[in-house]
Image (cartoon, rainbow, N blue to C red):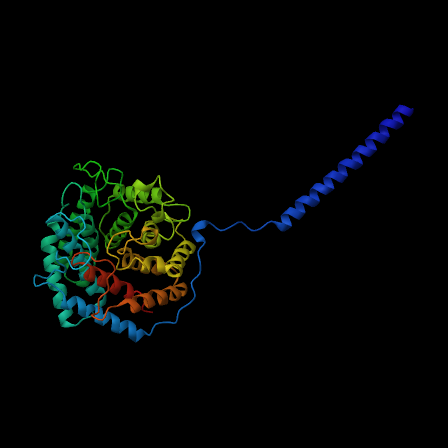
Length: 408
């Protein structure tokens, strides 16, 4: 009997202790739940927010556009092209003759044609300049090849050539014969992109590894992104795309994308993700192009929040790009930024802004316009990196198309 009483007492005490422990556990869980913070947002959505800027006067934008267009009109070559191999400032970067300069001139001419079509209006002198530029491009663009086994600046010609041909196609919509010819030229440029695609997919402008018929170049994120944007424009006017080409380029960008959506300079830097050029400050110009390219080709990770975060970075941290502007040696500035990323990055930022809901665009359009207006030279040009005698032409073309996107 005493044994039974002792067992009952032990069970009673054990049960009481168990309930006490259980209640304390529940209290601890509740307390932890109450103090738990919401999950941190993805790194790609975290960025410093720039202060708003005063809306630039629309009349000032129109005046700057007119002045920039007039610069291009006054600097067109007699044969209809833009740019020359003359060294006007800077250093003579690797540019085997004649191929490298044929590529530079074709790319720059294509960009100037695009800019005049987009921003030049219907002045007779603008129309004449476009017609002369188109005639030169139609004759010379199909002849552009890589300069030598190592140097593939021709990729820029194919990219911006496609974009110019798309705008030429839309410029005279009733001329069906002309439009068919232009579509054929676009297909030829796509064939060149297939021919010069890296064995690892995507595109790069140097092949220092092998120099084979099929380039063994390490693709660069920004060149691959620019190509994807141009190819999307061609697709939008009905040109059929080679699926494998697009898939390979998209895969290349995915391999180069870091968790915060900085992008490596090129695939060869995959073992150096912490190199300054691969950090957000070094990727300010590249991320705009890469995010836009992936968004256009259906990457659902490039959300509006991601686009906004990287636009916020571009304007809040614009000094990293601006300090490199007009430096003479590539990558000598902070974060190894090269001067030629300035207008490139802002041009593709305009494309990112266009992807946002209309109600969200004005904040960024005002920042973009303010940057372009403050940097226009007295002669109407813009430039960011001294490249023989091509820099004012390509810089002005980029800036004009960027500034046009700021109208609202």
